[in-house]
Image (cartoon, rainbow, N blue to C red; front, top):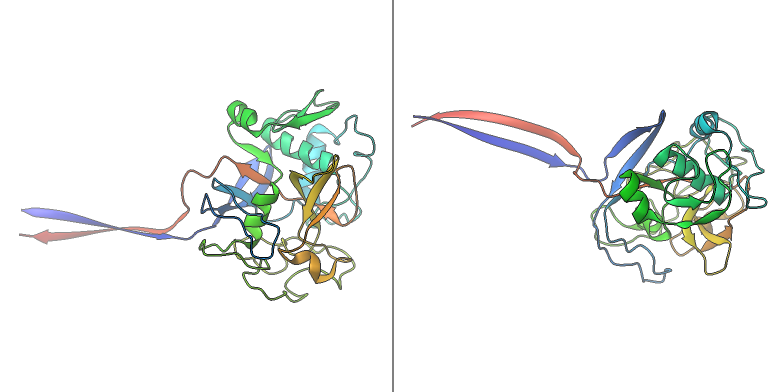
Length: 288
């Protein structure tokens, strides 16, 4: 009698990236696991607890990705004064998009979700041509309507992706997986006269780039003052190394457009399967 014994070898590599091509725009993501992790309360703001797995952009959104968006559906617009007047100050195709307000960033997210600047997790009163007034955020309804939803990361989602170790053991002060300030060759801050192309520096502990420096990144979460939201990560100049640390807390008016500010995006719901590498099937025949 012959028996076939199948050995299946699976090597799991957490936080492997995957690329989504969304309405012709290719965006790389990394998976963030360990759902239900505790917040970071060791001398830091108490952020980072997330009850679900999710994906976050491997890189900041670039000028090239932004230009593809406005070519498809036109520049962001609406009724919020001062939120839609800027164009990127630094225009290199692989530099992070900059001079972008929070309202412009969320219309980019809506477009990825629905093809319409006014529809998605971020609710507006109008339509794609003129989104009108911003009315609020409803991720749950967007998931029910569209399934996969593209958003700005909340402060907890952003913080966990930057500072929580990929093995789920603890937090670090910097996104490089240590409590030591990265060098200026590893992260774009302090000595630079402009942001560098995304991905030029150090790959961080969860597979991301430039969560330390390059441009400040808009978050979805509102600061406890009307019209103000959190920004994270530091920038190419002006903040020094202080902006890179987990202990840093910064925020800005949601209508602000500046050369130091851009964004990266996240995806919900959680990834349904782990990334697999080195899947092998070995069939061994034995005789009895």
